[in-house]
Image (cartoon, rainbow, N blue to C red; front, side, top):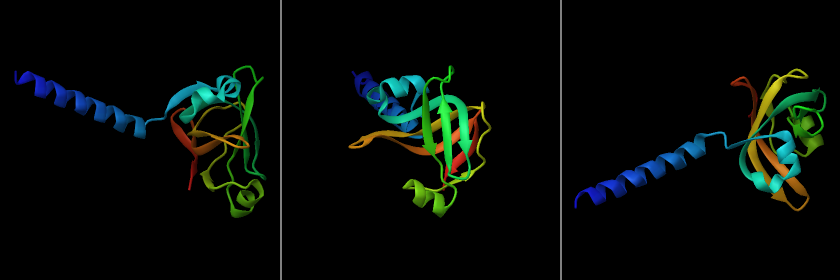
Length: 135
């Protein structure tokens, strides 16, 4: 009979570890075309994978495209206060912008708003290395 409380305690510990892992994890991993085609399915913590389609360092913009380069998302990554003001962005970023064609992952939280959808970008990685991160 004493096994039941131990099993319940073990289940709660496992559930707690799962919740902790989710908080520290990257979220749902998904390609650009799937997010673009059905953003409602990916609301919340997400890691969007693709390749760099273009970079505009003077404006603080980064384009991520799918494997066929038919779908894209433009990410605002302002590096200074002027770019931040011009883009109406909430954060400033630091790091090195990737090269065109480089595989990347955009980590953040996808939210639905009145105007559409917004990705609160926390970092951009490539091959496990952080390239750009929110300051």
